[in-house]
Image (cartoon, rainbow, N blue to C red; front, side, top):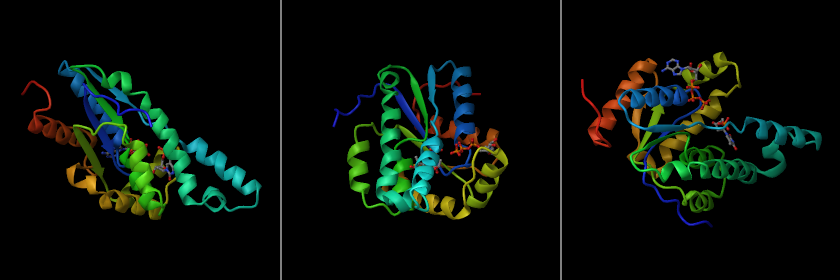
Length: 213
Ligand SMILES: Nc1ncnc2c1ncn2[C@@H]1O[C@H](COP(=O)(O)OP(=O)(O)OP(=O)(O)O)[C@@H](O)[C@H]1O
Ligand SMILES: Cc1cn([C@H]2C[C@H](O)[C@@H](COP(=O)(O)O)O2)c(=O)[nH]c1=O
């Protein structure tokens, strides 16, 4: 394993089920940080949807129902986790910057929650693998009713998430020991309210000097 990635920047992560509003809130937070003169970068989640689709197609061509049927849930999820791991290495240079805030849309906890949701047997291995990434200064869990999230995802029109999957993923997050350290944001509120709440938590934590008023 590579050595743990050093962190000098402030690291803020957004977690939550699909459609909870992570990307929307992360973008608004970056705008707010910029308006306050805080140097900040946003690392957007790179969807692995095309990888999942390709694996499902390969599986069906071989007579399986889907990638889980062909590879088993543990291996199928591990492939996604590995790609996320590689993607997250890209924040190393940003994390090395002092007086800088790095906002990440989906961090390592997504894959720990997915491991629970998909009942994989490699949670310990995943934790070791993702252990190279630093613990964020602040993790927001954008919480929303899975039914609302499913509707938002459907309306967005990019992909579809079943209510069953979103419910299991939310339960997966809730079961993580780290959940106790997460700051829960009400993702059912309007985006402006979500970011106001996020900002209040930054101020309360005194993460960096921000102007008041
Ligand atoms: N607070 C909100 N209230 C109502 N609609 C919202 C809110 N936040 C986001 N949306 C809308 O819901 C959809 C999903 O939002 P967004 O992409 O930010 O969620 P996400 O959590 O990043 O999703 P994913 O994990 O699937 O990428 C978008 O169409 C967005 O405009
Ligand atoms: C990588 C991966 C993802 N999922 C789930 C995780 C999210 O809930 C959705 C969307 O993920 P995206 O990659 O950000 O589009 O799918 C999954 O079930 N299995 C995976 O390996």
